[in-house]
Image 1 (cartoon, rainbow, N blue to C red):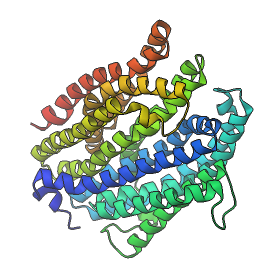
Image 2 (image 1 turned 60 degrees about the vertical axis):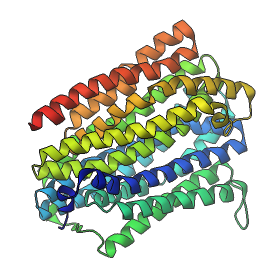
Image 3 (image 1 turned 90 degrees about the horizontal axis):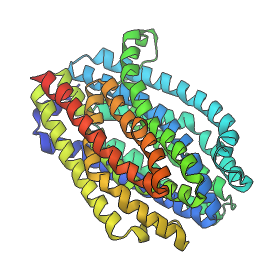
Image 4 (image 1 turned 90 degrees about the vertical axis):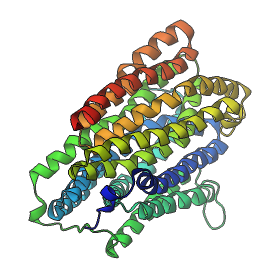
Length: 445
């Protein structure tokens, strides 16, 4: 279990070496999100609206599978730091089994509820039909997503970020290539329309899982998966869920937020619903790379916490915060400099571009300060403190922003909803900093 580099290498080079592969992977993943939406928008604006309405449920599936995997990642990294190989292996095996079960349940439930879910936001049967057709194919890959997420976090817990990068990028690149081929029927493929976009996504996810399994079979990580009675340790499962459940809620909260905001905005016009959906596609260019910093930082925090290297934990937190803030500065500049060009990737409507440009400029005011909340959540999860991390996410995605958006919409219309974003980020950042001073800094004196 030669993982000692996590507590001996200088902090900045260590965080960069762990994070940069993940940042690059997240950038490619962001590009996939943009390309996928770009080609769907070429089908019709109704197709893009359908994709926007399905997004919250897709995010819920990702939240459950990724959230539990984050819990497994923290437990595995902790036991690696404590030099307990047996428990690290048991946690890895349990994470696979439990997450596959999560995937099965999600497949059945999400496919069943989609028609009723879509009709909550639109009465247009064309949009409902497109959403159902897309989701039925996309959700069939939930088990693949679950298994792939577990393998991803297992590899990350051992510091094998380059392998994770290759696996993630392979799936995204395959998706980018297959999108136009399957949507528009290039070459030998039939024209599948919006179903082609869903199938291309699923094939890309399956490819990532296959590469993970091949790397595991080649013994590229020190973890071994033994599916026997020895892994049945309730204490390990309890620890994984203690972090995984709050992480799941944190990741699922954007689904709740988007659904509620869609209800508020739909009362004015479906144009605002489309703009909100476009914004959440665009913001992945910022928050996914920032999440790459978190993914690189989280196992280092867990390992050093397990090894009792508290001083390094604080240094890792501050380094991650600085890197994340740098990404957010770039995003803020782009949203103020070329908002019309960004929205124009998804719509040629002058009204949509005008509304979207205003939205981007207002929402982006909160980007830089949001890095405090993003990094705080990652550090707390790495320490196994899922509860405080969930508190921060609740503030960002429900407790503050939803009432604020409702009130500001009554006062100023949809523009008030955009202002609710940056006001919420300022409040959440203040609370995050206070929590981390107590949990990350003061507790480690």
